[in-house]
Length: 302
Image (cartoon, rainbow, N blue to C red; front, side, top):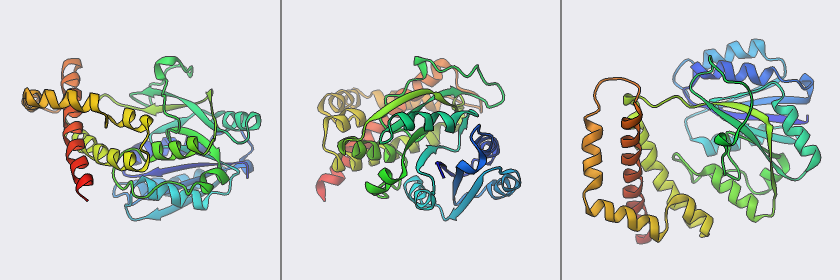
């Protein structure tokens, strides 16, 4: 088996059917790749979606059911079941183009030991897709971003897979990328290994969830920094004197409270407009750094 597409899903039934169909509609021979899906304890219509997908699968299709345990655990379960020489990670909101696997393998043929990073075009709907042409506005500087990345399966197993101490949202793929980078693994970018990434405009009803994720990401940022005390980590997470000092000054001036009052005034279920979205993002940044300071204090007290 040349390649494994690995993805985890949690309560994304509405998207998952389209994603799986795209995975099955690849230009490679059907016996040269497989799809390995981990259902991380979904409580929506995911199980029925998976059963419909089984009937349409044109390549080997493995499904693992687990109680909700988070992405790191789910990825490791998927890695353990992968039989492909290369493992291609995507998320359950990523729609790969038909030549997706072929392009990843083309890059691996050129650089057999490398990570291959593919291009992702952010879209607000899978029903209204722009032309499949990647541009620099969609660039991500992440060394290892599981929206669209592949690696030799033996390499990811050799570093121990994903660190399951990242039980909350955020940074588990960055941790893998740092370990691969420090192990001397090189990366190359193939913009033709392309996928559409579902990124709808946030709605007013999403704000509470967005704040929970921001705070969880702050807590896992401290975990990442403890594992990798390196300038790349401190810059990425904001756990550095400059950014922490700026946000401490903003807190001293009462800016977070003013932002929160403005966010509370956003009423009614609707798509956030530009001004509202800027306010929400500023509030989320304040919440992130507030939680970061608490997590640092908790870590230092242990």
